Image (cartoon, rainbow, N blue to C red; front, side):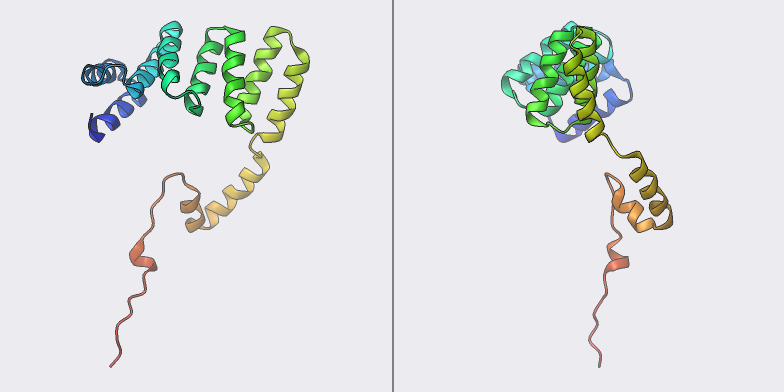
Length: 176
């Protein structure tokens, strides 16, 4: 599968064009059966469509190849959460935290999951961790005013940004 097709199914999924994305991914699976990335994105589609059992099965097949993939572990936890499989959701998020122990979203979800399971001490512990690692809203508002005042800082703060090389390149010409 070429890069264009990879980008194509990602864009199609983001735009909600699941039928076309699924066709592209199934074509990839015909070329390479059990292709983990294709199964991962088919799992994403299944989850978004509310077919949680299918999503979990697809994610589990990918986990055999990538057992420590953070995004995958989070998807597994979230899918179990959506289907109210609290024990499996807890297990998925706990596996995720073994790799990324400072993830605020995972702690927040574990706070809710443990509350649903009636394990209040764990819920309280994850609540404290969530508050410790969550984004600082005050810092965000301070940086927002700086980003408005300084366009260069705003550009640098973007996840994807570009640099105008001509504006920053001083052309040295020999003087005669």
